[in-house]
Length: 388
Image (cartoon, rainbow, N blue to C red; front, side):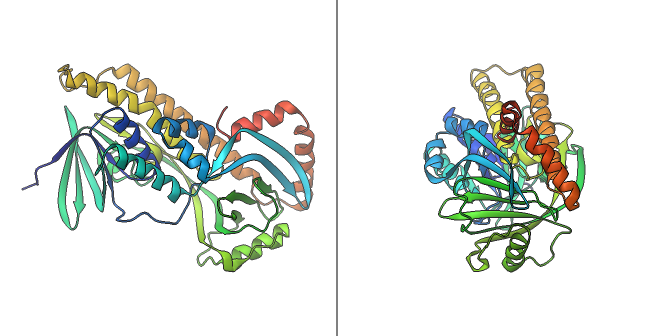
């Protein structure tokens, strides 16, 4: 016999930055919310670091933007270099905020705990979901035992391989790209301060971004996925392509990865909503995925809260989704935004692929000419900061 379900107005599956942010937005609106997270403890392995201006707007609504801004690095300038010379320079206004993902999650968790003590449940691994006319039930495992959580709404913020999306049978369009990268965090000896730097080199791009505490993240395009990455390997590639000295002994994070793109056919199935990577995974090159998820949260939180207010007043539309045209319009708008971000990411990856030195020099000469125009610089800046 299945255990009796614990009931809440909203059940969010996934306690990463997107699930936590949505939980905070709903808790601020007076919603009874629970957030289920499979990891018993937060990982210190930081992936996403860039908080773009639209994302900072959402975090301001969550009440954490000031805390994160005080803890991060403001990226107000981007520089492109190649073979020792400058190709272009961009101003970011407003700036992009660089914060390690673990710190972003920690700040959001503290805010959720302040608003809804006990709402975050760690060590609860969701394995499926059952839709019903007036809600949905999440099946999960906790401590080896089955547990169930019922909600008028269930939100899947459970990542690119979303078990809930799979349980619902929602099709996914998937593409794999030939690009591979090696990424690591090291003590910053670059002399580039708070600037983000792209090294457009014949052997492949090298990117670097400042982080709090005198740390700089380096990302290097590699020919294949490195099966056994080491700090020494990454430091050697950086030095070989750019001449920059990176101390491998100062490494605090290292990761090798390839690139996938996924777009779910729908973000809605009954009263289950997909957000973040569960709905759309884009290339991490450009750092737009986390902000896309926060914009999903911003779009859906008021709709969910309004539906719940109507339900509390006794207005039940026979268990059907209220305002279906509005929900469909919002969901389609978010899918279009994800598709656009994916196109930008593909262009960013193409920019970073290896080129013969002669072709690289020719391309860079074209770029230098283009970026003398203020309008081109402004357009590119808006695109990189998700404001276009």
